[in-house]
Length: 498
Image 1 (cartoon, rainbow, N blue to C red):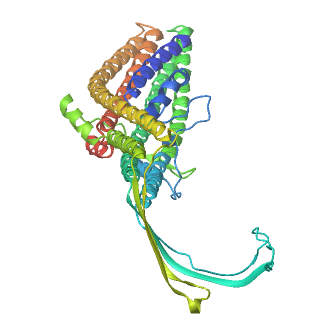
Image 2 (tube, rainbow, N blue to C red):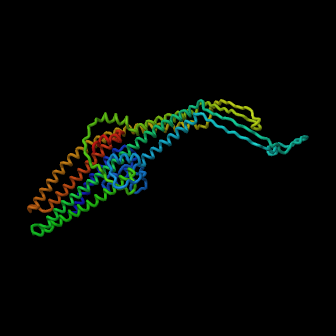
Image 3 (cartoon, helix red, strand yellow):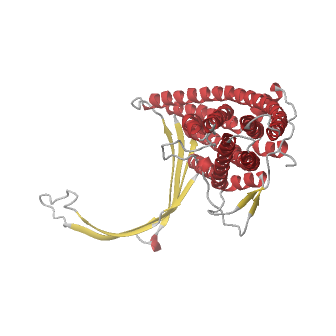
């Protein structure tokens, strides 16, 4: 009987893992998706649950920044933590968001670097010198009939000028600055997209944690039910109305449920550590999950409306568009290597043997640079820019198709998981009625503990299916919010009142 229970539980975990893994395929981030796909088989075999967003691949040392964080200061006592609180903390402390925000600063620096070449450059380089020159070192020797001293000097120099340089026209520099400006926009959109990914990661870990917490309550109730059955079977064995094998079956069922309770508590404790790591809680911080598994009916949304909203709101799509524009300007900058450029240089100041005898000096120059032959370097730059531009366009079109798939998948998951919640809720009622009738039949001596144990397993399976379907339903809503590019606003909208 123990073997049958273990096999039944294993099959149930595999079915649950397969459902969750299918849901994970809707994650639009290539970073999260790659980690899920590569570690899916190992994770399913070990725990029956999908890898969290950015979960490290088993057997490797790599960790996604979205599964890590910079810990905040500890809060005294027990910290109450709602889903919205967890998301807010994750947006502030998650490593993925912090690194993406730093990328904006780097992109802004690159843009200023490119802009600097188009702006005037001013400098002042005053100097004063006192020199004595060896003529022999310069190759000046004595000529016949002439006596030249071996060295001359000392004599002094003084020069103090304001220097200004300005690029009047350089099509390459102009387009390089435009490309850097688009790259900055891309970094800003990427940061917004990183915030959506943080919401997805936090939502996954938090919802998984409250699902594990619900499993503890279910497992505890099953232990109590199994204990009552065992006590009843023992009494009947002592009274001689039942064979001892009934008590043995009940004992095996009781210990199986106790093992499941122990495992459920351990899973919940480990999942809370994952929550803490994603949102940046201080190490050892005690906290309580205040939101339980909520069910709130989802307002229907048409595919066309969802796609229109996604294309307008998805920050990764806007970032890909900016990357394409940057590649277009970079291509123009590369081709501009064939064009002439015009620059201006001037200086003004005083110069002379000594500051007291210095006089006014200046110099003004305009330079027209015309490239004639540069050894094919411009052609090479154009070829490379063409390749990058083509890659950017292909990534943009791929992302557009991926958004379509993400939105459709999320809507299908919401519809399917919503129906599963309804069926699972009904199954719980039917399974509990079956268990009650089986226990009555056992008390009356009509049947043995086999029927009761099977009914207990049916109740446990029904509760597990309900918890899993409710978790999948809630995570599907977060996935839809991410697919639409409104993760922060979507959580507040889809989980209002929890």
